[in-house]
Length: 139
Image (cartoon, rainbow, N blue to C red; front, side):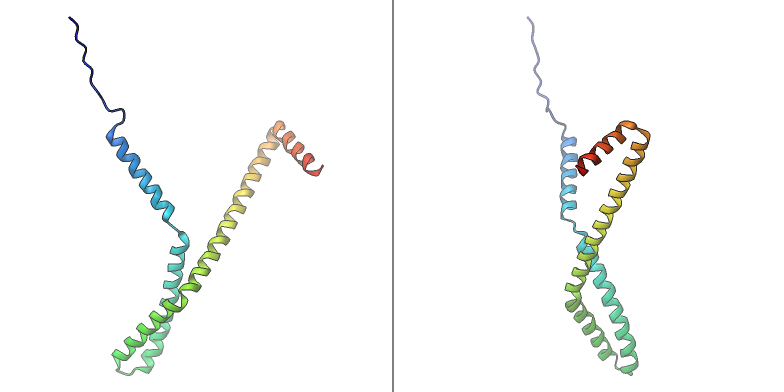
């Protein structure tokens, strides 16, 4: 008499499934990341720091021994700068990111054109394709 053993094995490895879940979660985190927000925060922090340094220099000469008044003025300057300049920092960051993206696309296009031209100089078939495309464009 012959007996057959039928063992059920999972078709997917649990470790592979966990790894795929981690990779998918990391992809979701990357999609939620906006470099404009980070740049805006850095610009705002730099502007506020510069204003606080200037205010400290002015308060140091003005508040002879009135340390509490000096601290209050510095905090008011810091919070007012954050409140008033946050929108401007966001707009500057957005414009900067758009300009950098456009510049990056232009550089990439130029490099691709240069590579294609070098390839066309070495391969007559590619040069013929480029010439045919150019003649179609002119017609």
